[in-house]
Image (cartoon, rainbow, N blue to C red; front, side, top):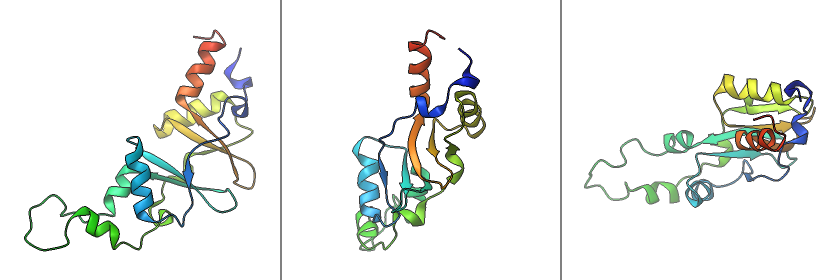
Length: 148
């Protein structure tokens, strides 16, 4: 089986965790802490892919002096987060982690290697997220197909 003939839509997962741009920062933090996440996909109300929030994006919005002993009140992480007006849409980066539904498995592997990221969001022509393709999904497909 040639990888250039396998459409990404055959392998992608159609259900995946995501948040809306209006999701408050405390909910984003909660999502990151649930399972030790390193990133979170953001879709708008219409389901269009807006980008990804990386753990480093989340940490960059927090006061850089956290962890340094201070006698001032209110400098703990929870105080900063409770008072923050930031939303998921304010933190989103990496919109290039999308690949069109017409892409092949070979295209996806090349994109993942170039960006050094273990997943891609598969979108239609209007940018609507149709699914998520993770490197682990590709490995499973290759194993089940007898390619590796």
